[in-house]
Amino acid sequence: MSDSAIPSERPVLNLAPRGASGEIPSASSGGSGKASSNPFGAAKPREAILAQRTGIDEKDIMAKEAQQFGTRLNLSKDQREAKEGVEAEIEAKKTAIASLESEDPQLVADLEAKEAELDALLKQFQVLAVEAAKQGGVRREDHQ
Image (cartoon, rainbow, N blue to C red; front, side, top):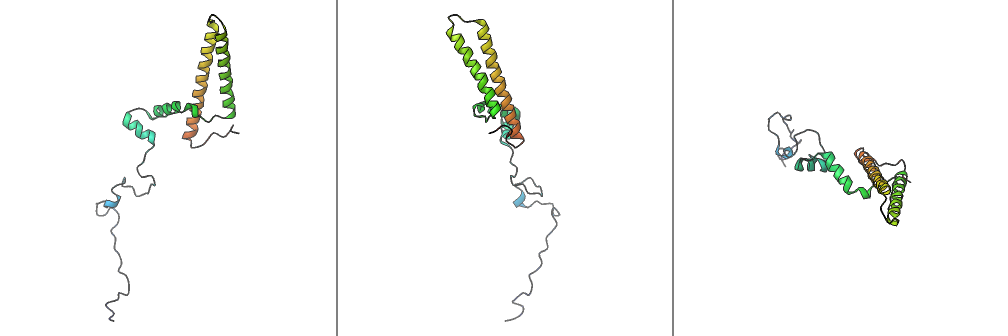
């Protein structure tokens, strides 16, 4: 065997500096051209994409979804007790109205006020749940 057939050392690969040729390689053309690597690529939150497509504000989209899933809120013990207390008062008012032969305007007004109170309470719980979700945590202060 001759010495010229077997290279003694691998040839050095001379690379041009990044961006020196002015041409971006085709492999990185799919990304945003940043040097840093992002595991999510150019992905955006679902609500941001829906906001772009529909023209509705991101917060409105989140509020609408919170309203749809309001019955699935994980309430703390104190929140659950407050909700059940108001619901019990509403049922008592409905029973009182049903037992009367003629409607008492004061009882009807009280019933409407309690239903409005329940709605406000649930909206407050939804706001707290959305804020906790935005912060990336779960409300744990009252869970047992």
